[in-house]
Image (cartoon, rainbow, N blue to C red; front, side, top):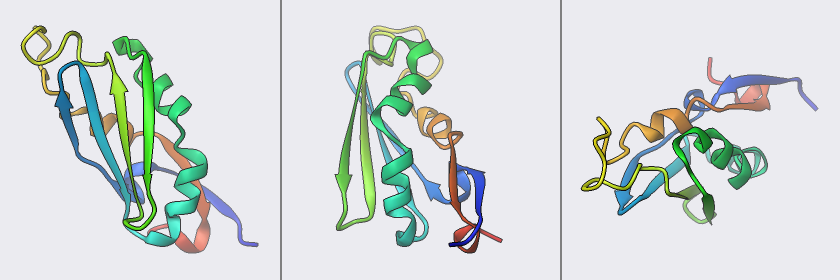
Length: 114
């Protein structure tokens, strides 16, 4: 087994965010489908919820989409009341995907980007 390296998630995956009410919806898609099982182990609901706890998030649900090699995370109560109920500069939560991609993951060296 090869040595693993720790990388920011943005080095191996991309994400987009949207909103519905006071919920943020974030996709997570690895650039290399071979990384899907590793991300499934490491990017958990608990980890994502902890990442957004400072924003008042109360729940995170992860939907696995194995045929697409992707995930969808829905984080509740993270938009400070939602688009119409918040003075937040990012009322739609579009930058939340960048925060998600700041998480670190460990991947085998041979799957790390060069």
